[in-house]
Image 1: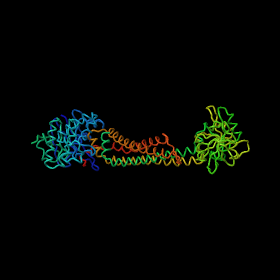
Image 2: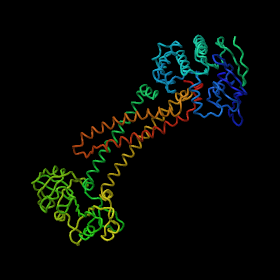
Image 3: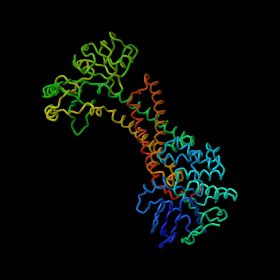
Image 4: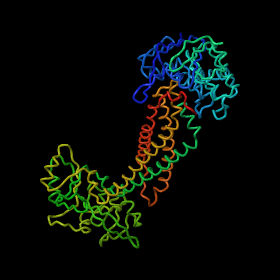
Length: 227
Length: 361
């Protein structure tokens, strides 16, 4: 398994008591598969994604990324793990305004200390894979919403992550563009052999995913095959 | 610096504005530094140029501070110092300020009286009771050349030579014999020939405290004696205070700019952290950006200050253009600016990458 959450519990302070965001959640995501996590707003989807992304340490339970258990890791070690093993597709594209589409991807390789020439080649390959080869020199304000989201997806794949975490990627897109984005994520998951978790409250585009898990009130119902 | 360079190019307007502020502050600091040094030189160069390491003043009574204007040393005090073990040279030096007149030209001068042959004065071998050595500014002000005559406090004197550019208390120096000087400034004490101070060259064996007690003097280093020039401390202190405030203002302005800039970039920083950028790497990137801006602005500001300084240096404006007056303030500007920027940029450490998840843009 590339992503393995075992008995994860996460609580937040809520006045004098604590609110349980995730309640003994266990989730296994194998390589090359796309698992959709669906549920209503406030059900714990985003918390699950944040825990899997190592951005929050759970109160209880373990997170294992590509065989590495994150329990007890320092902040620096978690940052290294995110850089090498985890790709994140944000709900909003979150592109840096001063960078072109190619540079949005190259910055990931620069953070990782890779050579500029190799980084540029890889960035152009990925932009080609998401259908933006001819937009490589454009900045975010020169791209459409769908194009920005595709740059967001390509950026997440730049460091060849083992785990791909996708947060509500269609929330700002119309139906047609949303379907195209989900289709793209599915294809890239299989092509890159990534263990992908797609968090969404919208079930309309989920015909192509491998499994669907439902989260409600912090509890996860075991994934079932889609379709 | 991958993101920093691109930010600099992308947000040209904001960085150009800040760069202009740095250029203007550096220009102001550079001009003020040159002016401070130039005014200081006009005030003290005759003293700092003396071949002596200590200056003995008549010990003032009643807790008064040392003063070149008030000190009068007697022949007895001078001879006491000359006999002191470890003193390799004890030269009496008389100082007073008066007016010199040549034809229709007249100017205020400082008269420095020395013994003929004294190492204190340039060309002292040419000084006698009727001949004097003029500093170049004095000769220029009076329009005199060697061999010419002029009047000094009622005495008719001949210019033996024009040497050096010594000034004291903003007036050019005329080197005379002690006899000529005494006629300019009659001695206050009755104990034989007098001077204002004794210029000393000493070695490590000199017991200054014991010698001061024996001679009734108070001895300080040549540099410390500058505070005994009435106008020097207040004038130099005021200008240095202005310069200090400018340095502080520059650090605050740069700090304020980078505080706002860092807050504006917080969402970008959160995204980069979430994607795996280390805090140290992001800090290095941001500090590099600040240093590029600072170095560029300071370089341009210093260049303009140096060019303006070179233009006015030969005129009546007392501007001193040296590496110390130009490069030192530039280095301080960069250092303090970097400190201000670093204090602002450190808030990058507190940006939570979690905010990148679900953060709207």
